[in-house]
Image 1 (tube, rainbow, N blue to C red):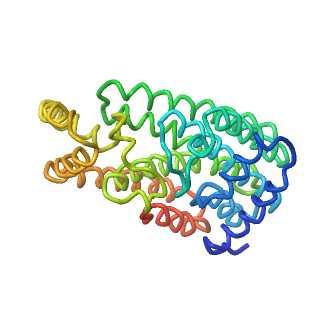
Image 2 (cartoon, helix red, strand yellow; image 1 turned 135 degrees about the vertical axis):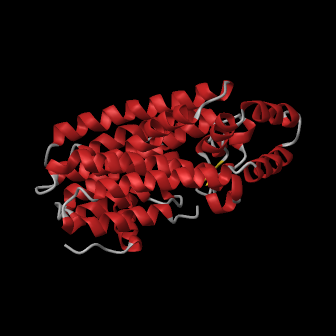
Image 3 (cartoon, one colour; image 1 turned 90 degrees about the vertical axis):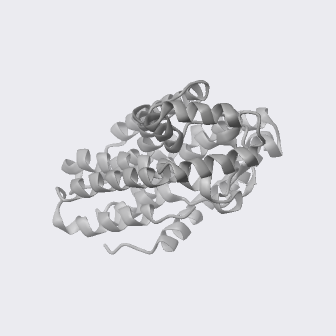
Length: 319
């Protein structure tokens, strides 16, 4: 089966996702759900499942159910994360707690969390194993978010940051690859390799987010880019700065603590650039890229080019 364009995958997925607009029941629950899933998004996780589904020649119905499951899980985590982080913008629209209130956001987040397993349960092959892994990943994402919240109150090394990223972001990327393998007739034996690629891609994605949030606008990112600074969120840049020169980093934190958010961001950008942190973070990205490429070399020849294409697509994103 030939792979499709990214836009074709997105269009196919959005057609399936749009069916949720037909959900009937209390508007208090379903209006926020319909609102958030109707907003613009990269839909990268379902794209991975769909792309691999074609590469592996998987059953299309199983593939789309897997794609729905991972995207609903992703949105479930975003709704709750936005409450915890106090973010008012997501996919260039107001977050649910901003448009309604926290009660609406908690309940609709729970609803999204319940919808995901319904689609996963429709997968015909290895259904129980996929459901178990799906719920294990939910817990691992919660662990990653817990680390993220704990890290607000202390300094964090690069190793700790990577652990958090593996759980908060990498685990769901890994699940996209794992579901595709578990649906497959031909590539199940390569599941460990594909899982490692997925987890590494998730860490790459998280590091890219940190770098982009420091260098681009809220409009380009589709979400607020100042909350990390406001809440002392730890990023790959802050962790590298700490590991490189703890005294200089702590001195900078003391100097900027009473500055405005705009001033803080500019001073941090200047520090990261002048200290070489930006370049070092990009080198680390390439290191994870090379890890993925090394794993790809161990896969069957017929899928290697497709995996490189998928890897390059994620590495070249600009928002």
